[in-house]
Image 1 (cartoon, rainbow over the protein chains, first blue to last red):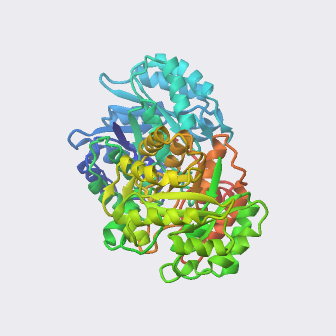
Image 2 (cartoon, rainbow over the protein chains, first blue to last red):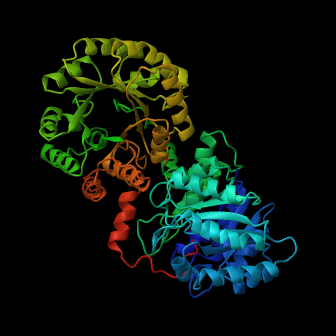
Image 3 (spheres, rainbow over the protein chains, first blue to last red):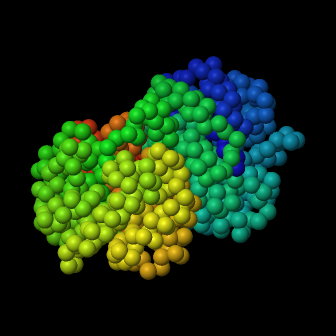
Length: 308
Length: 308
């Protein structure tokens, strides 16, 4: 079971006050210290659109220095893919949407243009570089609602031949997927594309189904799951709309299920507490809070008659 | 799919400042107006232990007046069962724990004594009265940790013959169950006790698995699920330790899955917002917040480049 810690990208990007680069790298080092071995450390994107990630090259360099850490960086188009590669990145995450309308809003181009860009990125990919393909809005689009499975599969029909070894990640961008739909998509995708080596799942906890959907993905034999420490990732323009599934919720759940993901929960909760306290952060998740409450209040359980 | 709204009992009991009886009944009426047709409206229990529920008889009378509402009340022992019946209750929920240590703490007697009490309650049950049997700590006990499935099944070996038509509810008291264990318990229980007519599930969202576990129960063919509006039910002595799975999270999820439970989400969210605002409440759940954010911020989705 591989957890990809995406907090330094998907979490930080939604925080308004700039987090000092040193502070970002310190958190990344602590995540690494907790056992995180794969991370989306930043994105190479427009500094105008996402000022928080303007320090991508420096953050990437800080993350790359850590032993045994597989550092992926997100890129929205060819121009930024080139910059990432120039900065030394050898694991890219390219994003496009199953929803045309969302793709236009998210990366400012049509799905067709995104596919063409992807083809050129793949052609220029350095020897040994790895690619993760993020398919956003495969379940639901904020603009047009539910997306049919076929829309995503049709996009993969075109994308997969360009780089058969790419890891394919289904993203529940709005958090409105339910476990049955997560399972259904992966089952249909596996059946149609048996050649894909690795499937991944990226979900949001906006409606409280973050862990439930991750478990559904795991049961569909997906063994790469994205998560964000402290559940960071809420949209800065939607107070209360929480972010990615919290890494600590996922690690705790896996632990309860007897599944090892190599991450130390206590150390993860420690660094997640720090992240939750960042100025402008809108933390999510439950486990950090529940365990903090237990640790702080040892007598909590000796209350009379709670009735179960 | 039947949802039992347990907020007026499990939610209110953990709130410290007394909620006026009229306010409780007004919330119960609004829940009924939203389509709730089964409710644990209160508990007949020691007023010293749970001062918040000292108005049980009045709240029960208010709930009973509502058209088509199946009102169950929780009782911890024979003495209070008698009081509930005197007050007119015809649907009791009796609670005992699979964990001896928890039973001692929760209802101040051994499991054996609880079983004996149950036998006497059953003997004195009025014609036509219904019984729900809540088995607490069947997955995990706050004092001794994980509970083996066999402990619960052994308890049911003794309890079931006393009243074969009782509804049996497995309660995840600590919120530490995972979907695999929820499914496992119900599968084992169904195999051993095919005579049981109705199984139910009562879970907490303390670790974020409230809805995930409810779905696992549903997949194990459990069609009665407890939930609490606004996710009320956190322990008053553990700030941050959230309560029951939120009714609105469950109703929203069922709606997304195309399952009708007869409850109007908009009206439910409206009354849940009121409950979340009660003095001393520690609300939980995600859907209330997510939908409130969406309603309040219509332009939220037109943000540039969020990358999915």
